[in-house]
Amino acid sequence: RRMLPRAAKRTFREKLLQGVLLLSVLFLLVAGPIYYFSTASFLLRSNPIVSAALQVSLVTITETEANQLQLYNTRQASISTPKSLSDVAAFVQAHPQASAAEGLSLQDVGFPIAADTLWLGSDPLRL
Image (tube, one colour):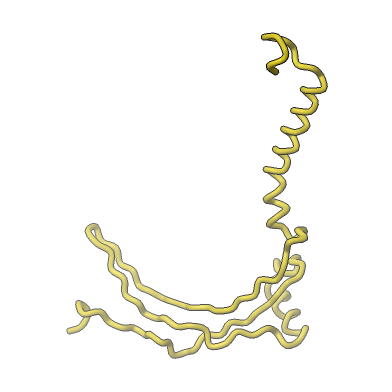
């Protein structure tokens, strides 16, 4: 641009090049994340669960404060994958929206009935 005089028209080649580049960048900004997070991405791979925790708390909120009482807290007892195709078919039948997922990876996470922490009353709740 410095070689051209002020207010000189841009050449058709320059306009075309900048337009194509701008449209390409816009297309990548819009379509890139959609492709990256879709099942069509070549970067897609299995992402298995390696650990799980479950916590249930009772939260009360007043005008001046918020109190939290932990009712249940535990880690997983087991993590397994279905042993047969009939288990996968039963899951897909129970959850029809999962049938469209390509490369469906199922895992069963089990939690113990008795928790590590169960209904521990805080000092103000004890008589």
